[in-house]
Image 1 (cartoon, one colour):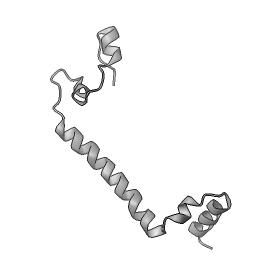
Image 2 (image 1 turned 30 degrees about the vertical axis):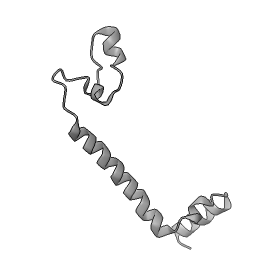
Image 3 (image 1 turned 45 degrees about the vertical axis):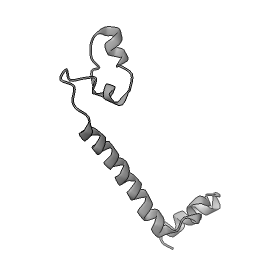
Image 4 (image 1 turned 90 degrees about the horizontal axis):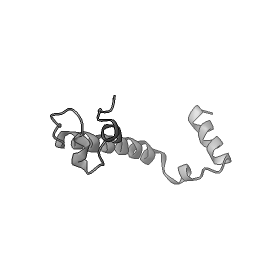
Length: 79
């Protein structure tokens, strides 16, 4: 018995039938496609943003709130 077959049988014994419902070739294509799509979205978004000349607060273009540390202390985040 191969390692993959043993792992599949172990999952089935534990009641994880969701993986059985999706055919193996489909799973091996969908997961990488989701990872590639997510990566593409992040890279596209970063290409669309214009860097802030001050070196921080670029996230405000996305409608996010200002940095709490900067608001409270007047110093930018150490990251």
